[in-house]
Length: 415
Image (cartoon, rainbow, N blue to C red; front, side):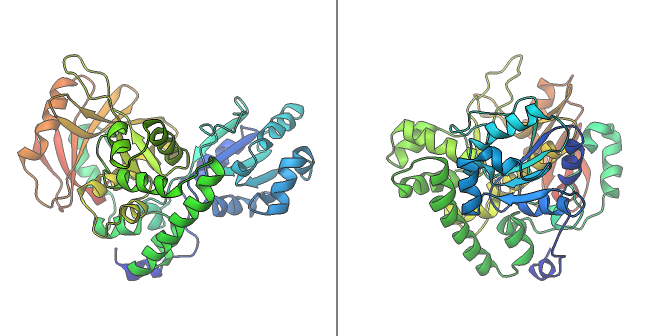
């Protein structure tokens, strides 16, 4: 998709998470929508306000934030149904929400949004267990940017038999896309949909990173030297798609290991860094247990690293970001993992849904051969009972069986 096409998109694009939010409001007293700043949480909840009669307040407003801290019960008595934006600014407000729900429990009373993972924040002592459903809004998927309100077509591989995969995939509408342009745009709505020039996008990302450091990070924790935090963030961004060796990272940026660990946890709590854990079930092979480092947004990762040209790791990150959205927007839960043996055999992603697993390899090449699927073949031999087939995503145009049970697919037919 060209940059000129991004200018013609509608101002408000439907989000794939919206049906899950509506469904949750029919059951849970509290629905918490969390995710990085600027993913579109406020827009999503305001869209809900068009049909639902509920009071909207934001803790970005200083007076409201002060009332939430000093008189939280008074704030909650303002309306029977409320939406409270940026609730991480007043963590103790969750205790008042719990009291209100316990006094009068009915579905849909509160919608909360937060730019941090409330369950990981040290200052949050109340999780609202049994009262709240937590939903994550990730940066926009490619298909959301195309106004299709969905993540990728990953369910196809679990709901149909492998012999049917080629024909089903060929029926999925395109269009084909330039993955490098998508990686530069990322998925934050403003740079992805409303800024046409790459130079202007980079300016937006620079401002976003500055705000993230000066405002969001300091709200989450007391950090004396933000330059150290930024240096570690850059070091991790330059290792996108690689194993996370915390000791090595700490040494490279001259930080104490405990400080590096705390900073990495903050990156994760604020929905920037995403750790991909390893698939650990194996009968015969020693597997690597360290997580791999990815980012929720490739445009952010490129700017943090100071890179202007996307690499193969950013192509992997694009696919991973779509998998995260598919996982969290679907009713049926799935796990996203990677597989790596001590001898170096590796599969980029392993999707586990129910009793089935799907190994996925990602190649930023328009031509692929048997050498590109040797690790997929090892994996399929190891897990032949659970894995019906394997998938190789690449940048070419044809759907074809490359090896026994391994289908080569243009990435844009799935993502």
